[in-house]
Image 1 (tube, rainbow, N blue to C red):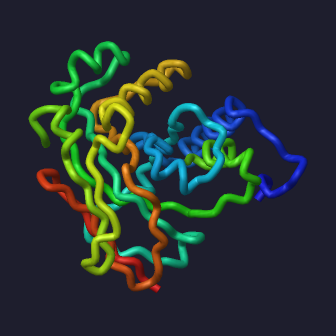
Image 2 (tube, rainbow, N blue to C red):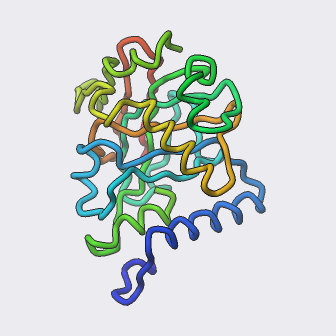
Length: 231
């Protein structure tokens, strides 16, 4: 709520510092980091978020308490202005020492690629010029990584297609999001580990979710996912 106060202000580095401190507190209370997300990658998402004041994507933590299997039923009342994104995601097969190693060994480092539905509390309280900081502080099987450039992901609600796009809608493709994440983690003394998942960003905008909606995120060749929103 503090972001709604006109006098409150954070720089982008301070917003990340706040995110990291909250992540540490969550780990201390027993939650585990299941992976990371890269966000605000494609123009479609940047346009929805408004004037973020960012010249690159942002990243955040994913905790084990926030990960659900396909066909889950979710209580709409547990979210605030729930919206969803259909995204490409990776599961890591190896620990990743640095971005150069990942770029050279992507086929061995990535265990699987698949579609996910990302759940958002879609509410920005900060004015337009400060939304990037709010988003950051709040924790905004394939043969070749090149194939993801032409892999199409579609988001459906109750069987109706809301939108579809390929990996080319993400600047330099989904793998570039993964490399960006590794570079950012290195700056804070962290690295990607075997078994962690990474959400590589959505080529599509956010879609509002209402009680009773049945969402799907499907790909042509990759595993898809479904979720139902309960009242």
